[in-house]
Amino acid sequence: MKVTAYGAAGCVTGSCFLIESDKRVLVDCGLFQGGQAMDALNREPWPFDPADLQAVLLTHAHIDHSGRLPKLVKDGFHGPIYTTVPTAALCRILLLDSAHIQEMEAEWKTRRHLRKGHPPVSPLYTTEDAEKAIALLQPVSQDQFLTVSETMRVRFRNAGHILGSSILELWRGDLKDGLKIVFSGDIGRKDQLLVKDPQPIFEADALFIESTYGNRRHRSYEESVAELAEAVRYSYEHGEKVLVPAFAVERTQEILYVLGQLFREGSIPRLPVYLDSPLAIAATEIFRQMVHEFDEQTQEIIHQGHDPFHFPELVFSRSAQDSQALNELKGPAVIIAGNGMCTAGRILHHLKHNLWRRGCSLVIVGYQAEGSLGRRIIEGAKSVRVLGEDIMVRAKVFTIGGFSAHADQEELLQWLSHFTNPKLQVVVIHGEKEIAASFAQMVRRRLKLETTVPELGQTLFFDKAAKPTVVPEVARSRWDEVLAVVEARVAQARRGLDVWAERLDADGSEELEAAVRVFMRTLERYAGKA
Image (cartoon, rainbow, N blue to C red; front, side, top):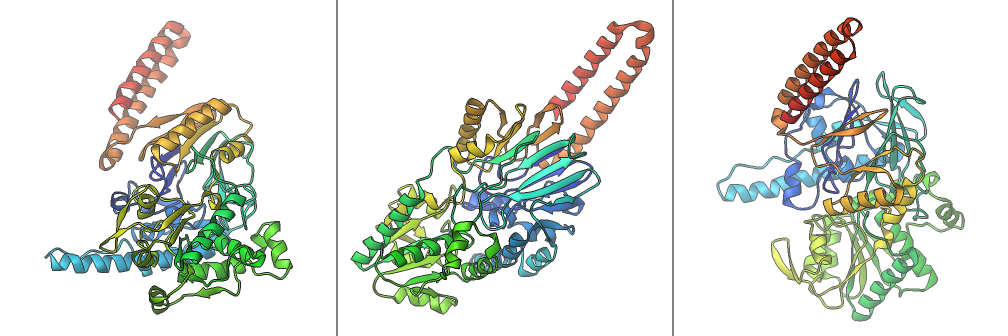
């Protein structure tokens, strides 16, 4: 089986892995996020033909895993997109929102280009493309086996990251004796709010594991709740606002959960909380419809008569006018707005109006990709550019890691320790280069397992009894040409080996050994050219 990393390799975002066996199957198809350089990758030509794909297997709904699906469909994919029921429901709102953003950004850039005499800018994809992708979603049940092709089967297991998130177990051949590869997706934390704990997996020949926080430990949940309460009290005392850039799915619902708890306990003063994100509001409604997916603690809160996502102080800001009115609002308030990395959305307007105010709190509760505005702020920038203006950073910045939906280093190692195969091949992905390398080294030292950290565009060959072979990235436009040459020369060498093998009975083993040497030199020579 051949697996090529076309995303989330050497970086966190853009998850996309091409599996080639009897058919071609894609695991995830996400947007690259984190600044102009990463965004440019979204517009590169596909290094494969989307029309040739048998199916897409989607681990979860976050845009860095699902956000290029409309482009894939636009460019020729027409097969099924298999995923869980909650993921399909969330994708229906997330992909439409992403398409709207693509259209709005293209319109804004076109106006700028036309004023300079440049050609208009086309959106990466449109709402129509998103609707076509949504029509291809085929929900499947977790823990059930799904036949993808004649030789490939897959099973979705709970990843404990967000609602509906999955680990993928893939088999080539027989379930008992065939090759088994596992994709961790994004692994959640044990005892995380709302969702059930990640499913332990015990058997595999190879594992692709995320490493977003593979070099650090998160603060405890209790410390994180205390820090959020501190941020609220700080801005309340100064008469200013608390800004929370939040991902619409999971993180927003967790913050609502915690704020409701703090209000009920009397740990923070009463002040209005504005959820300024139509997408997050829609996602919250989906969460309410899927109570059976929650963990026991959340279900117990519901049985006690509390809505974990609502409290009297909560106000929904649905329209653009509602959002704009918050800029004129006087006095303390909490404003939760998208997006989580401060790269787009309504949070930018709130940053423009409040980031320069002493007494304002900026609460960062999610991963900030390299190159994103949020990343620059938490790294200590004194001034940042927001919506075309340079804004001083005078707000107090709180970075709260305990609400992360990603497992940290120790939690990843603990989940990985369940695997029983001492020859398990561990492929470390979905992490910045230094972090992925650090986590791979930790896996080798602590668990004594072989690790690989692929680069973007690298291909790995897996066999039941052999270590993965890594093929370096080549110029994508020449890949098919190079591969055809290599395959032809390998076939020629094998024919030569067959001839020598037929002579073995008469000529003895030395002749066969010589043939093997010729065969290996030929392979090495043409593999080197590739």
